[in-house]
Image 1 (cartoon, one colour):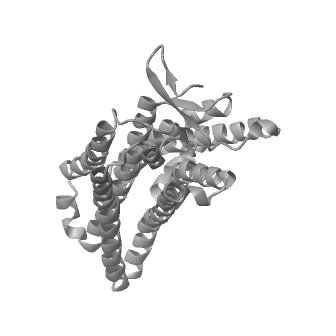
Image 2 (image 1 turned 90 degrees about the horizontal axis):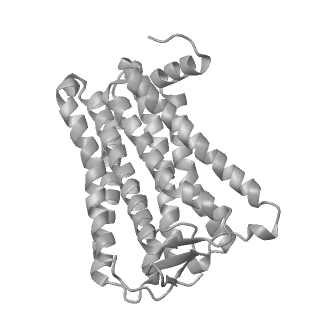
Image 3 (image 1 turned 30 degrees about the vertical axis):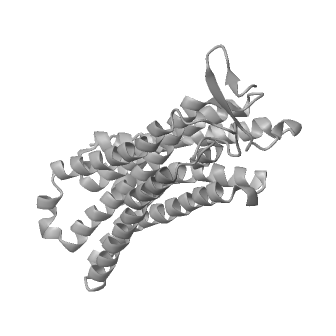
Length: 313
């Protein structure tokens, strides 16, 4: 397809990151695997969110933040999977430039929101374990609402700035080496703005590095407090903090993957890039609800009742 559709005056971008499955018999197998992964992501995340909504025992800040994190994963996956599945069965993998910009906006806005939600969860655990007597006063409903709004609104506003500024930016290349729109889009512009590059670094620090440092600080304080506490406190800390740490480590590795892919495209084969990209969009949304469902006793209890169809409170 031509880069420009003259009838509608729409610019199209072609994805060339798809492995040439048409030459093999694995096309529908790959489609089935990714389609199954997407359905599992929807079912697993929705189940935990549903349990959090209907059970009053889960109407606590920790579980509300978990539900928000899983809702964020649903939005993240829905931004990628439907289009990706359509591309698998299409003769040509193309996307209009405005839709591509929107996908970039959602991808990085929701990715940054994930870090901020993990920061809110770390703060909640810090107050619960290190300042238990002050917990009801500090983690009030208004505090939880403020942290949730901040986690979604701040990244959306910051990521929107370069997206809006790039709407009318001229493209000199119309092929992306990936399978969806991400930071690699900047390599297609005729002129790369140094100011936008600096601003991108600022956003990365503000919504990525600083939240990560805050999480490390809070968990360091938690570990020091737990080390001097009784066995019961240590057990509680392990049960509630370990899932958060597993999710944080997993997500940090996946974001690092994305940065490596965007910066070192020429050093990766198409197959390696494809596999790494699929990992980025699959692992975290799929394993987050599994980790929380298995590791957190209260959620696990209600989940077992739901699956066994036993009467609940």
